[in-house]
Image (cartoon, rainbow, N blue to C red; front, side, top):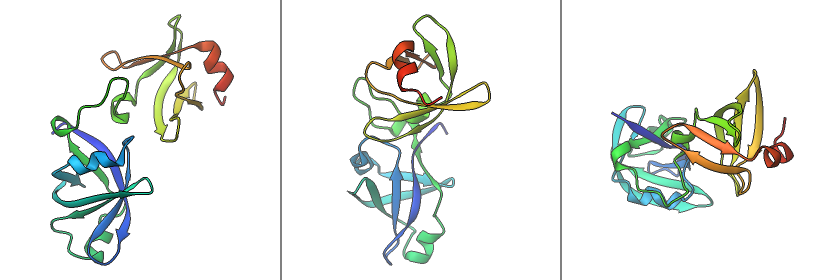
Length: 165
């Protein structure tokens, strides 16, 4: 199954089996659209979802209490790719960006995208020559994203101004 990682279980919430999820989406409310999720390869029907403080809280069929929820701690939350909600223009799933080449407008390869830290402006972590370099995915830094070619083009001058080398 082609799947998309949309979050990770942080911990149980309360005594009734609810789990607290760190979402890997711009809007935690995206989880309200999911009818089912997969954790550790097992399918769970979503009984209810709510969002608060940037986290998502899910009640799942088959998770009746805190002890059952505790067993899910640290598991990735995935959904089938074909059930993923469509994104607005200029938005991307992190999973689709990871592994992309970071290149300048002149075609110079700077590195490979390894991680994205979500914040007001996402922070990209790239690997280059055995070291990690962080930079914000701010307007003016990222010029374009080509998912088919797995390529993120940056303005080299702006990138050099903001990158943590």
